[in-house]
Length: 102
Image (cartoon, rainbow, N blue to C red; front, side):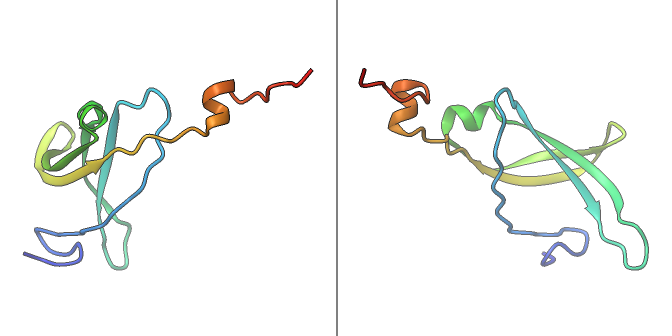
């Protein structure tokens, strides 16, 4: 197994934090190779549906197809955790408005 994102079977072991907008239903991962002295090349992309992680709270590392021009180019393994944004008590009870004492 290659290390640090190099070779034919790169392994990144990275953690990323994303803030999702309402209505977001999928995560699109664009995979590029790194070339010395020239521009990086597009290898392919993977689309990950987010409904399972919203429902379960997390999904273990799962393989997703990487495609380029609708052709299979390999797989990427990704695990996901979903942490809903916590609202403060004031936002929950008053929709962001403060109660008047009058």
